[in-house]
Length: 357
Image 1 (tube, one colour):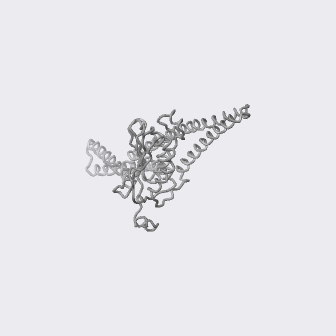
Image 2 (spheres, helix red, strand yellow):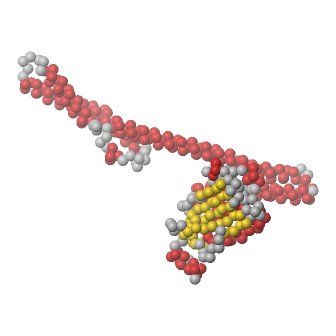
Image 3 (cartoon, one colour):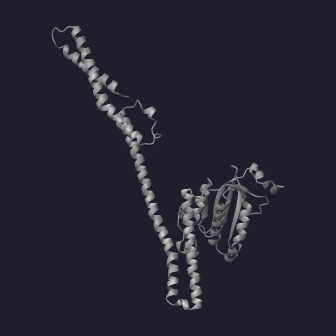
């Protein structure tokens, strides 16, 4: 039932008038006219008094509180027009409850961000410490006298340089993630041949794959260009990372391959798969987190910053897509994502029709 000051005043006035009239019937020799006049007077005076008290001392104060609360809330949370006739006590209770829930949610999000910030700082400190301490140790050893030995000097300088290169790579990866998240790095979308890009990457990583005893190839021979729309430089970075990981975590004698699949939604699915050691099911949900390593000891031996897959995730999400993974421990892994297929008109405008001649 809906109430306002008028309805409440009316109910109270009727009750007071009825009770007053009932008592007057007990008075001997009272006339009907007197009873009617008493009823009307008691009704009108009660109605006016109750209405004024409720309106000025109660309802208007509640409305003021309600309006103040509305000003600090998102106007989209409550449709005020639909609630205008609701009991103000229920309405303000609803508003306060909604406001409390939103603030509780904000507090939880702030706590999560604080935990994330704390973990991130701890991870960065830990990751920076390793190359810095290594380079520092080699340099101090040389300063303590080893610099006079030509062979030792050259060996230690190479190791120090390697540690500093790892430090530089780590810093660059951290900056890349930070810039993508803050929007400083904008994606420059263009049409390009995904097949040609992957062919170039395979040639670039061919020596690395041969040294590791890995058969690196495309799943089949693609005769025609595969034209997609995206940021060429960033997708190149994604493919380098995924293929390098496939080589890194596949045993000698294994294979890593790239495949393409045309989807119905005018998209191209790009996959990088291997028959390496795979990822345990318990780790799959976390592999795209910053600095997360499935096997921390072996991952450090194989190099890398622990940020590669996190960067991949951010780049693919900037293309309004999602990086997915299917993996079975000790069997192999497959990473895949979808890119928009370039339309025929776009291909013609950029001169791709010559490739189909």
